[in-house]
Length: 131
Image (tube, rainbow, N blue to C red):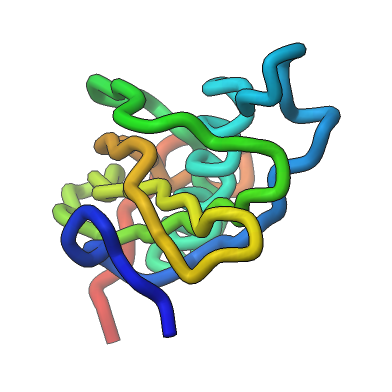
């Protein structure tokens, strides 16, 4: 059973991946840019499902890292569609580390990602109504 050290994740588990040596610096800490890229991938998955089509990242609001990721940790990305505008969506995103060979889960970082729905020509399009 997983033990959450920092409350519980908000949103749905959207992506899980293993932090490998190629994702780390010489001290064994995983690059923040790698974590952010995984968060962006998860947002792309969730937003494309909601938009029923192509999406792009327009902005990321304020991100700071509370705890490091280490080689062997499993990165778990949780997403929640917070707001839907005409062509854009704001997603709340949390990155959690399941520590290597442990049931401990710790929140690494969180941010708001703004995603924009695009049509076939790459122009912003309306996000369809749910349902």
